[in-house]
Length: 203
Image (spheres, rainbow, N blue to C red):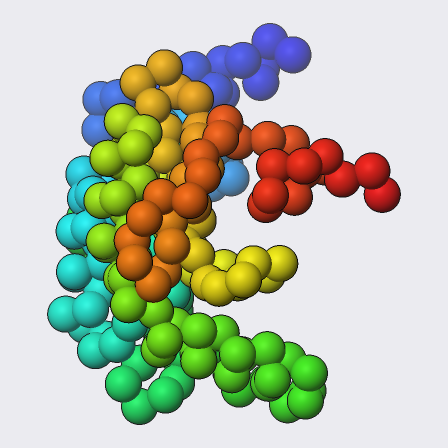
């Protein structure tokens, strides 16, 4: 136990001082673990708002945003877009503003392909964009938008579900009509046993 402690201390000293003969006392794996501990920490958080993230993604991929979500640790935005050529694209924007994207694989399964087409048709029919829905939501609930997604399950017509984190850190779900931009409803984010109508699911 004593020898192991000396190795860790020596390796930490090497990282801090940038040199010395202490490297002979520790193997590469030990030095690596110490270095990661010394230089590690929480990932950088993005400073981009949801509107800025959407605009930046659309500069790279011409198309319409179907969903945008901030990573739980706040380090990046992830977006799904329907490109002008009809393909679906996944876009990520990291804390440094770097944009990466790739085309989603086409669904071979008939049911999945039909679902993807229905999502595309709903997005094309929407008169309100994801950015406009985010703006409408924060007009109803003051806070920071962490996600926007177009939903049409169980509704008469598609609506944007916008998640807003208020100043107290409480998450709210705000539903915005995709046709006219009106706020349909809002609630404090519930547990998974509640559906989008706010009713408790007894199943």
